[in-house]
Image (cartoon, rainbow, N blue to C red):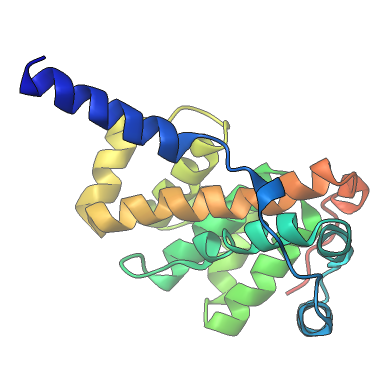
Length: 200
């Protein structure tokens, strides 16, 4: 067997092992702690966000909750993307996911982080009046979740304005933001997801 063939087989084996579902039955997970629940309650009190579906997950499957929390950093990750653009991506995603409480939460977090109310009002009510670069972030984020087409022209403009790293961040932020409304639907907790009046 030649070296190239052997190398290909080894790479395939490594990928197969790394991508295979993990046997979670072989792992032990500590029951959800009072600290975990207290942290959720504190978050709920701070932002007025109903965390019942997260508490349910933690109580019913501590292991699943532990795995879920490992993905939480995705929506909050920001290094190259400016603050406004970061929150435009998050909020545009939540709006497209049709989750009112998650949208409300991200609006309040955006205000707390220092995003201008005027920018958020434009995003909600007159997105066509956003600065072109923020409009591109909004449209690209919506397209990622299925509202339209992810166009090379828009991505090219985003790369030119923000840089390659920032465009990669948008992808991770959008994916990370979607996990919350998706979990709500999976836990049959999406009855409260209707978008009503948004206050921030």
